[in-house]
Image (cartoon, rainbow, N blue to C red; front, side, top):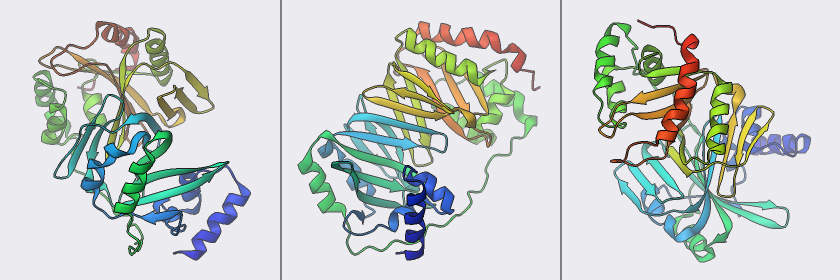
Length: 350
């Protein structure tokens, strides 16, 4: 245990008692996992890295809160882990409430955590990548199955494990973003038959996601303002529209499907504060927003894609749909209201 870091954190907590662990880690220039590891003992314990086996047993936890975040957005969804499957380094949980796409190659550390909160103890399983960044967290609720939590804790806590300091590491860039191939890229885009094929298309041409949207400007993508994006969210709420909101990081994508009702801006944060779903979005970190059309066998599928100033995808939003079913006409028409307004933001790239 890093006693010096532990003391620094305790001193910082006295100065700023409401500071969250992620923000404290940034302040102290360490990772969140490193900070959490300073509390290893009765209330914080390392887990065996048997991620696949753990995930397959999450159905025994009952009703929980699943949290996935990136630097700019937090996605919290309550429900039950259902239909969990693992295939090599990828896994799925496809319940109506908790809907996850999981990439296990980016999972490195796991902790069982008990945190005192007022008159209760908040229990959670927390997972981090090789840099010590949070990938996914599962929190107990008052509707959780107590025996399920005890069993998973007993099965996966490793009392002999020691924490090794995360390595910063750099991920080599694979994108070339060569504009010479833009015409061929757009032609291939026009022939898409499934939204999932878009990832393969980006890899084939070695284009980053944001670059691809820039070169498709006015054809398949339409840049809109942050204000228009928030207005679109508000309209979706007023129309009682079922939508899908995707938030992810390299190790996880978490999806909410349903309505959004209670929208609460608070300073730089735009929040959805519904009983089963919470979203916390840092609007001051939004650099660009695009409405994006992709052709499929089921007709056009339209998404809203939000990026930060490093070109990292913060959030995606779709109208509710399933394979084989066209997207909602209401969602499509709502998106057209904003693509029509976006012409002055979409100069031709080619």
